[in-house]
Structures are given as structure tokens and as C-alpha cells.
Amino acid sequence: MIVIPAVDIRNGKCVRLYQGRKEREIIYGDDPAQMALRWQREGAQYLHVVDLDGAFEGEPQNLNSLKEILGKVTIPIEFGGGLRKMEFVEQVFKWGVDRVVIGTAAVRDRNFIRESVASFGRRIFLGLDMRNGLLAVEGWMEQSDISMERMLVDVQEIGVGGVICTDISSDGTLAGPNFAMLEKVLSSCQLRVIASGGVKTVEHLRQLRALRGGALYGVIVGRALYSGDLKLEDALKALAEGEGAGREC
Image (cartoon, rainbow, N blue to C red; front, side, top):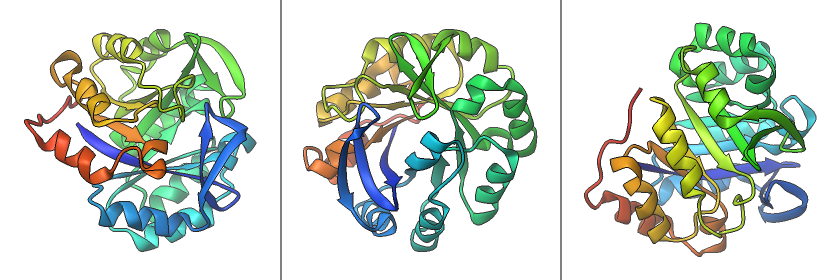
């Protein structure tokens, strides 16, 4: 299981939101590229970059920040936020993004996912964001009537590379991951699964790694790293102890 630091961008700044709420924003820096470089220097092997404005507005708004990050770091990046048209997916891949995360468009339009996978294969990941048992869309501002379990059944045969599962009620709270949700996901699909939301401590990471015999592929950590509750070095050391490879597709 790998630890993936999050770099969330809003209005060109590096921020964290509490449960995805715009009014509960904490700004951690004016230069997302420098923040990305910091996590690389501290040992990150992968980065999770999100255009929050893009998620809210329906198309990317911080592509200049993404380009700056890609120009600074050498580790691979997954990117999401407002990628609801093929032209944007193609553009960010052309710039050097390693994989793309599609959220709202995955829920709204299965054909878009099929087209994306047909072009880019397992470099397409789905962002599945759950609130009260159902998937949220439009930057988490709207609730769909689709459960995560149903979505997983629908997309497994499409050929996506994996899924990023977020419990919105946990995101940015440092209250701990939704282990029960992740157990359900891991038991119901054979995709690579990345957990997101609620991580605060090394013990949380150890618990995640233990789920279903080490089936979890990775975990995104955001606020805990920015607040200092969790140091990336400590997280990497903890997971290096007896680490397995995680689930592959």
C-alpha cells in the first residue's frame, strides 16, 4: 500500500476543505507546485492533485497550476477535477499526467468512461465519493441516487484502472477512515482501490493496510500532513514494515 499526498488547488492556492465544504477552507500555501515539490523531497512516490474549482464549475480552472507542478516534480501524478470532456482528458495526459481521475462524469455518463478507457486504458481511475451511502457529484454539492456498490458493478467490465473511494463525512476531519465502507468495496470488486478521507495517524495507516489481507492499493493523505499530525516520513516508515504489493487488477 502506498501513501499518496494530496495537493488540492482552489483559486491557485493549496488548500484543504472540511467535508468538501467551500466555506470550511484552510489555505496552506500560495504555490501548489512548491507544495508538490515538498512532498517529493520528503519521499512521496506519487501525488494526488485536484482542481477543486474545476470540480465545482464543471471544467478545469487551475490548469496553469497543474502545468507548474508537472514542471517541478518528477514523480507521477494523478489528476482530477472537472474532467468531463475528452478534450480535457487528452490535454492533461499530453502534458504528462500519469493517470486521470473521473468522478461526476463517471456517474452521469457511462459512455464517457468507455470512451476514456478505450483511449487510455487503465490510466483512467474513477473517483467514487460517498455520502450517506450514495455517490455525490458536482464537487460533492449534489447527491445522486446511485450507491457505490451499484457503481462498482456497472464499471468493473469497462476496464478502468482502479477506484478512489472517499467517505465525504470523514474527509478533512482527521476522525479516521470509514473502514466498513472500504471493506465492502474490497469485497465486491477486483479493481485497485485507493482510500481517501479521515487519516490522521500511523495507526490508521496500519489498519488500512490490514484490510482483507493487504488488498488496499493506496491511501490518499491530505490534512494530516499539512497540519503536522502525521509526518510523511513516519507514514512511509510504518508502511515499509512488512509491506506487501497490494491488489493489482
